[in-house]
Length: 97
Image: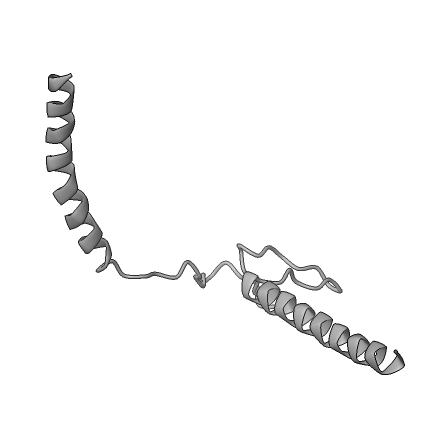
């Protein structure tokens, strides 16, 4: 049992400072956005619209797929509308009662 405790103690003594230094180093890592714009020259035909390769081509009449930011704002808007409708229906119920 003593050998096991001694080996765990050694691992603890080595790894604790290493983890501490690693944590401090992580605080200085820069944040990079994954949002990128790809611009290519020479391949695009002049009469074709420029499309984002990652979003895919959008056919005529179709609406493009919303981005994550647009999805978030849509969700927030729908939650706010739901709360407003609940408040409005709650106020009418109170006056009717």
